[in-house]
Length: 108
Image (cartoon, rainbow, N blue to C red; front, side, top):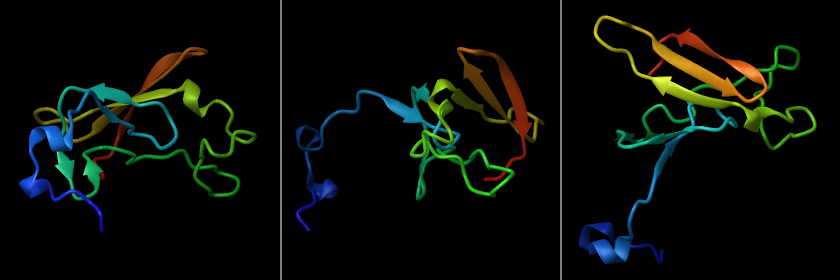
């Protein structure tokens, strides 16, 4: 109700996209994209991973800054598999730690 019927909208009615961002790991900073695939679940690769607390089994959330004060200090980027490679590469960067990479199973 009250929404815009996109099929009949002109470009000026809809607006303009200034930037695209993907956040591969929930509650971490993400990466700027020049283009992406949009699926029924949103941007391909957006929030497909999360940090899991091994003690209580809950997902780490930036909404709990007392428990997870540094999540926004990390930036995650996702590289899609190429050629015969079957795994994605998830890269983490933090100003206080060295950058690191992690090969992750293709879950999508």
